[in-house]
Length: 175
Image (cartoon, rainbow, N blue to C red; front, top):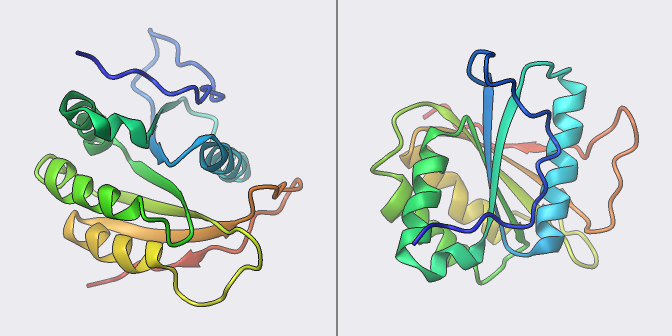
């Protein structure tokens, strides 16, 4: 049984089949449609600021893929090939434990290249300045699978005006 793609529209330019492989492969795992929207807006803004002119391949899945082993395996295969893996979840979400388990069990054995794990933390209500459970759980996993770790916090209603994005909390651990 194949994995169903989430209703997360691919807003990046479709690559020309005759063109070389995409220069950037982004995989996004999200908790629900609100977190998917936040991750999409942020990644679009980052790519726009980076003047990313080369094709971008983008895949996104909701946590419901974890309800079926075939879904977990298919998501892991795509995520293993990604240059950037985005995990979009609410701050301190109980779903984080399922994500960490998936990263350790399904993704870790397949990961063979460097990349970046980006935690998009959706703040509800007053944003805190303390380290979130998202960062506590995901940063060590990123090191285990040889990925740089970055995190940023956004509000579900945040709009990113032209030329600005939220100041990211970079947790690129050299060790």
